[in-house]
Length: 141
Ligand SMILES: Nc1ncnc2c1ncn2[C@@H]1O[C@H](COP(=O)(O)OP(=O)(O)OP(=O)(O)O)[C@@H](O)[C@H]1O
Ligand SMILES: [Mg+2]
Image 1: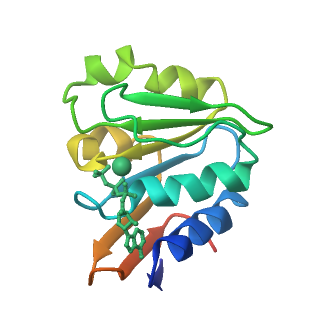
Image 2: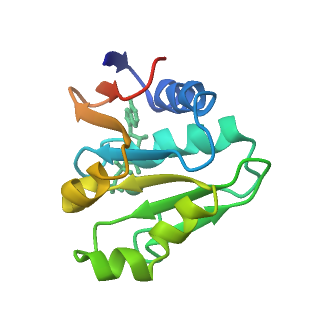
């Protein structure tokens, strides 16, 4: 387990970039942390670090965004879904099987199912207006 403190959005993006180096096809990164914690910011860093060329945006309504690149990334927001059927229908298992790197915002909604996929977990806590405590488990950084 590693704990980091970031003091602005750019530092969180940079930490995402640093994690990207450690990801391999089929890796799952599951985020917890409430509204505005910085999950999408961290994902922007991962996408950048993977060399993805598509811009990162919140997939709240789409459920999943796919970013093309040498190491493609599928970015899920599980806020609006709640069943295994929904997760499957959104293509979650297909992306993992295809060797995409997958990240999930709002993993709280699927803690048990995601645990079966041996995720790297990233928990983001808001400690102030611009400060965040970020706890990463399941990988050496
Ligand atoms: N240290 C920090 N790290 C990340 N974001 C920060 C930080 N300090 C301030 N912010 C701000 O917090 C917000 C984080 O937004 P972001 O969309 O990344 O959160 P989120 O966890 O994805 O939220 P949601 O649950 O709505 O999807 C942005 O407005 C960003 O500028
Ligand atoms: Mg988000």
